[in-house]
Image 1 (cartoon, rainbow, N blue to C red):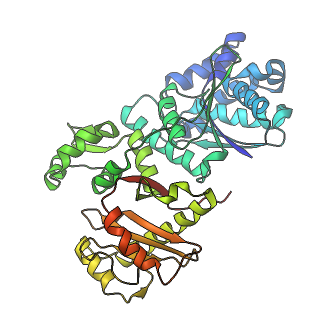
Image 2: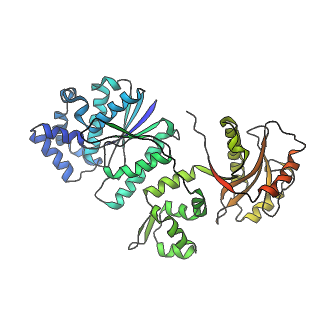
Length: 415
């Protein structure tokens, strides 16, 4: 089943006004639009609501079918294109008109269109999403990104974003969100029947820069209310700003700062992944997918164990000492220490049998484990009496080799 995320605009009303001389409908529409009535206050507009709903009855939908609105047209085209079961999510902005459109469309889709008789249709408000106030729009976009992520539940392969309806200002953000999560995006050109698909394209993300400034990005995610004071606490702020200014929003007059919606998209993605440094020529890249998944599961286990065990440590030297003090039968220090100065140890996975990782780790300035370095590994059939000597022999050769960043999801989605 595909989850179809569809933004809801006001084409439903505009198409009706274009074809009908309905004064009550038009006056109600203009009042809600011109007075910027928000979604919650629709409940106090019962008469105007009735004037609009009266025109958009079953007869109207059955007469005009797919042409009643951009949302209906695009959903029908998607159904024809994909021929799969749909779970439709109608996302409406924080306006009375968008909410009313979503509620009318929910009823129409489930009752008037045979194509969707077996589809579940949900309507979801996106608080603060409006275009009259820039600051509120930023908050609204953040709420939209968060809601789309919640709907996906991490299974982006089952998600389609339909950007045909709704505010045009949301399109760049939803496009980036879809691209980095490898989720297809669809839309229909105005006044045409052509369904356009934007397929995922390879996007290279500089994960290292997010790791480098993770301690600052974490603060920006929460919001900063005294920017000048904040700058004094972080000597690296100017460099951070130069490298990541496209991802942050700043109000110099009010001394406020936070991640902008695009920044939140990338920060959210970073937080969902373990940053793993692995030699570019590692055998990992030649393994079949099921074997890669086993190695990744072992990395997840290692990361979780390190985060818990090193929770109260503040620098890498104290972390190294703490691991060295473990017995050589502990999973985090299985066997002898390979490099005491750099903190290179052998990890024995218990979640994945017969896997050993030759590893180290990096910390942020506040003592958080930010990444794992995997120098080498053995798995499945290996000589238990010889692999440690193999690690000792290979480590001096591979420790300074070029490494690739491999993002490993912290949690595996189960469809």
